Amino acid sequence: MKNKKCTLVLLLCVFIGFPLSAFQGGPLLYLRADFGGGITLPSISQASLKEFNKDAVRMSGMMSSLLMSGEVEGGYVFDSERFFGLRKNHPFSALGTFVALGVGQGNTSQKVEAVTSAGPFDTFMIVDFTPVVNFGLSAKAYFFNNRLTVGAAVGGRMIADMSPNYLVYSTDPGVIQTEVGQIIVTQEMMKKMNPLMFSVKGTLEYNIPVLDTTDIVLGWYTRYNIYRPKYLTAPKKLADLAATNGGDITKPFPDYWLNSLDFGINLGFAFKL
Image 1 (tube, rainbow, N blue to C red):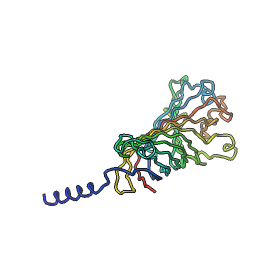
Image 2 (cartoon, rainbow, N blue to C red):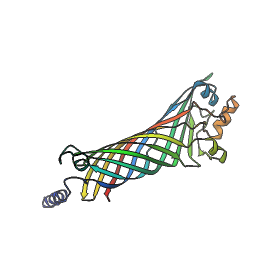
Image 3 (cartoon, rainbow, N blue to C red):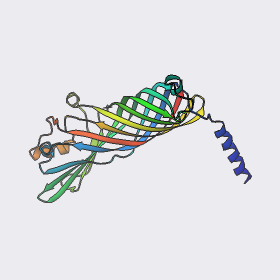
Image 4 (spheres, one colour):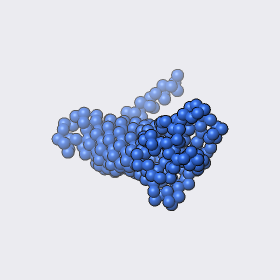
């Protein structure tokens, strides 16, 4: 019991020693790690889908596995009392603008449903990209002495992986067996395919002051990515199967979109410079 009381007193002393409010404004640097996942939201016309599989009736997306990334974000926070003339304890405490750069993992997970003479037949394809480079501009509104932050960002993501890993499987292993491998991105593919996607992001963060110049930041994020790759990317086995069935996936498909929705939590530090 004595040990428990000593531990409680120590914790109270630590938390009492924390600043009552977060940083008050000025230049700020964030370092954070993101942990989350995503769901692929593909879109393609029926005519283009038939080029992939003449019996295909629908393409849909699936959830990814755990995706991790790291990000550096720097900018300036404008204190509401100094720059906006608000009273000292007004709920709205600051407004910040930032630029961000990060590196992490990416994923596309798709399912193609087909109806053949033997019945329904589904093909699944999962591709993992590492690295994916994230960049963008953001604005953040700070509330309650800079404890709560609501942010919005616009930017882009670039797939920088020249040999992404894939997993392919189907509901009929006799037609398409389970296969893992790498898609080698050739110089010709690099010239043709689009590696860039546009993204919009929303964040919600809670800042826990630990020093006058340092906060621990706990957050949640969601990001919508808009991506038109221009070409259907598939392992050789699926490309050969498409060709055998009269399809041609080597030509461009301007109506093929591979959008995605990411979401997750993050943990980081904010440093007042």
